[in-house]
Image (cartoon, rainbow, N blue to C red):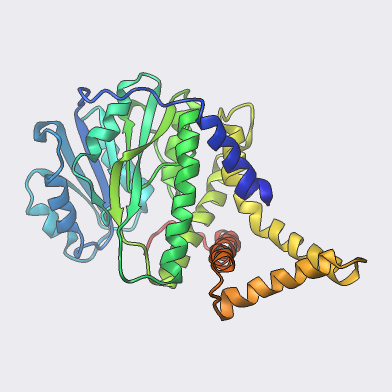
Length: 363
């Protein structure tokens, strides 16, 4: 447990201090195809189109392709009003993977930019992304998700924000020492020649795609200046659903692509195993740790384990039933809440993968 959450992040953070990413070339402006897959997004699609029009990138180098995944609202009709956008309609639910495959087949340009509909893309984000692709050994680049400041804050938003800051620290370090193990699905760039066909039903295309790029011998970078903005969810049920789907996607990914678990095939096996695989095992390690502590607290001689058990019980109680004004303990309680919630979602994600074969269809 200590290695998963402290040891590995600390190790790659220290290694990242002695290396650096390749220099960016802002004069490199290839033709790009922006790909967005949507399902019933009539409330958001026009805002996204307006956002794309505001990008600081030459219009004659941009192709926009929007794929509707069996939408039964007015999403497609809104897109049709914008004659510069290529619309691909699917009249049945196919899932994001198949929609992306169709868009890639229809794309004409050298670089693909994959986005989600909800987030707002910073005006200069595309330039920041593609400037990294000027290096021959770089195959894909991830943008950075930033949560907007909001007065509407609760424990769910705090947990999401804390987790994402922690995760970004790991991704930045992984990028510098070699390659990041997953990209931000809401914004990433990839050289078209390296884009794989995504297997139907794949949940985590934002992990599958970069890992196939890495397998081919190219680097996948994290670009902190390519910013997209989003609002942290204040609804615990929505955040739980998203996290469970992501965890289930990790199980699915390794089941469908067993080469990811081979140190002889996966060039970044150490990072992938430490970051992805062990994180999935965390709730089971946690259960063993807590059961062992209870046993030692009750049956071991001396007072050390008894005091440790009492402290853990104290933290658990105040995590879910109260608050405390002592700053140090208050910080521990907040971190503990995010930690326990993450592991709870990881357990539910494992269960969901086993029982729900249609989880790849986002609703």
